[in-house]
Image 1 (cartoon, rainbow, N blue to C red):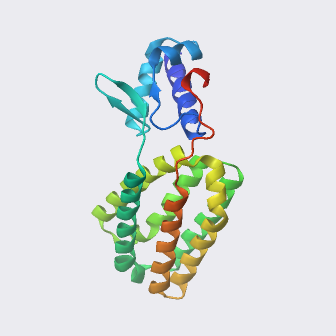
Image 2 (image 1 turned 60 degrees about the vertical axis):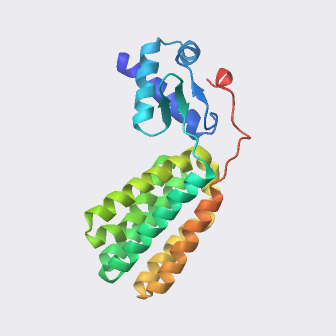
Length: 223
């Protein structure tokens, strides 16, 4: 029962963040959440620890727990690093790509479509990450894959907090087409085209990642 209450609290808060009901920077007050969810403060405290470990919140000593609030500059920096890492992957891995890799990427595109059609944002983000990791994995450079995986996870958190499902659906109108174009560039052995499409793809994704507070609600009216 204890674990189920903790999971209930964790899921409720996570969904509130993902569905843009909780604004970035909102303080999570244990007593308020416990009262609204009709649970003790222990599962709330444990859920907050999990949220901190998963990167959704920051716990500031003597101040409390807050939904992460990345600035536009911070997100731009993350995308800059991501772009550089992916371009390194292209330079090192493009010549190593085979039909095995392109078949895998094509299959992932179909899975992306399915996830978006089902409004499964978590599945979509995981599949999208796998797609962008294919070339990095082909390089066989552990440091490259570790760093790229980490930055993609960080950017996924930004997408969850600032975009939610309806924003990703709008982006996906062109996102899957660009992924298809990337696969075609590999098949035609056109590295320059691949790099150009990739840069455009990532720049567009960053532009879509904008702060929007219209659907945010105060914590007192959340649950």
